Length: 512
Ligand SMILES: NC(=O)c1ccc[n+]([C@@H]2O[C@H](COP(=O)([O-])OP(=O)(O)OC[C@H]3O[C@@H](n4cnc5c(N)ncnc54)[C@H](OP(=O)(O)O)[C@@H]3O)[C@@H](O)[C@H]2O)c1
Image (cartoon, rainbow, N blue to C red):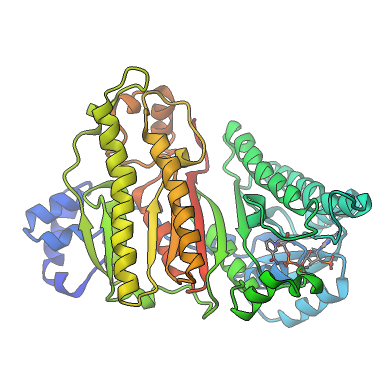
């Protein structure tokens, strides 16, 4: 049965016509429907047949989730939220009394909290916790590796016991818990989800004293998440892995002497810190994505305000979407219209990109110039105009660059010529703009959203013929433009103080 998702008021009279067309041929494209009913606006109607791209926590209700370091801060907020969502949450930490208090507070909620005293720097403790879960609750579906510590010493003259402890908790404990969870998921045929609570310092250092091995352990977490993703991918496992990297969060982790430092005082004075609830929202979002979608998220702060995920503040506002005539851009435009925005779609009917297939070594510089003009210069000019307009009108707006996974790491596909270079440039442009806006204390947000392979017209015929891409299509290891539109909506829905800096969306199984 056909299902029409969007029904903006002015389209109601055409709805029946649309349903008729879809009933006749469910595969009719929205553009074709628009042509048939002679209504240009209808191209934003999203007609889906038997397709569910809905964000939902339903499949986790009644399932077991393990949260390490659940006795305070981010871990406690995540555990609480998961219990509210109806999961059976096993909470691990050393301070059992804190866990017991949380369990008591959550009595009568949809799910339940099970406290287990565990020191994740001790392998035996972790093994015992998983054994207890196996014997008493059943298969693990979700693991949130949140336990983490800092230590007050330095590298040049520091105390190696402090280093050892940080490494044991942040790296080894996380790896052991992950192994146990993956073993359990595989043994029970569970397509589960592992979430590592990483940090922005797992991607880039900040100039703060006495961080010693902490950033190194978070860099290790970045590598561990990606290594596990590749490992799971090589065995075609559908277990998901998400690395979630918060900026500064107001928790007990931040030592008091840090709070005296100028940069931290400023952050706290200006309320430029995240709340643990913001991170719990990110976890729920990652868990809510459809089974084929994989998220890597970097969350940082702008300024504190309300904490509800909501699109309300964008309703009736203008949004500009470039490249909106097909694929990802069209899906984003549709979704934004569904959410009540006035969408200005910019596009020129693209030239067939198959004509652009040219190698770097003997390529046509006009082709390169064209790609660079669209992907880098066009993006920069549109961004400048939008930021100027936002500033002139005092609008705390949001710029979203649709980047690519090849903007971070190359893939082994032929004839991509300057395309990855332009996406690397987009990565740098997003970060440069963020720093620029930040230095002016602007509340305009900037998000770089990097999809993997998406089924759109940008995939040239010769690329489609590649074995790895054919495999991806046969095994449906390919994203739908709507998955990317969902990511845009998530980034836009975050509260004004929360910045989704980088959102990587890939399929759970990949072939390149
Ligand atoms: N706060 C931030 O600005 C920030 C920013 C980015 C990333 N993070 C990351 O977020 C995670 C949570 O930190 P938080 O800010 O919420 O700090 P927090 O309030 O200090 O919480 C840390 C949690 O880890 C647990 N933990 C520490 N050592 C443990 C051990 N040996 N065994 C078991 N549990 C242990 C603690 O429980 P017990 O002491 O009861 O064992 C506590 O529940 C960490 O991975 C941290 O690196 C924090």
